[in-house]
Length: 155
Image 1 (tube, helix red, strand yellow):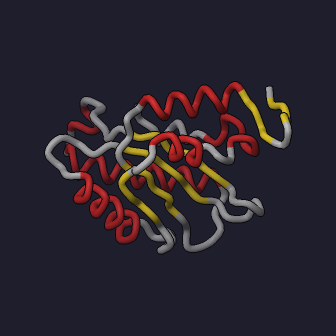
Image 2: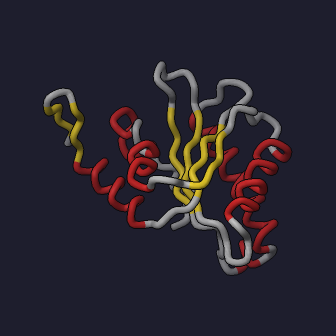
């Protein structure tokens, strides 16, 4: 249940998710955009395609046969004015791949392999996990648990 407390939103679901994200020891934070306005369903579908490409390139057939996938949490967001659907995620690189190289791989596949992705993306190494955890979920008050892209996440 959400309540307002001196202008600050409190929400037990939000706090639990922030705590869960902080415990994940995540290495990478990303924001992915689209070339034109897409609805949340289309955004999640594109995100699924993106991560399937990444997992297939990194793990080959094991990604499907044994469900070995990149560790990640993905959220869908609408933007300040509810008209700019975009995606935030946290992820970990895989064994044998440096964080910096993994970031380059993610950027390449988002920009080159999907047809309606936007060029204004940001994917960086996490510097402050607590701040990242809160920012990842900063639109939770608007969408509630629907902000989580569960079909795309893999923890």
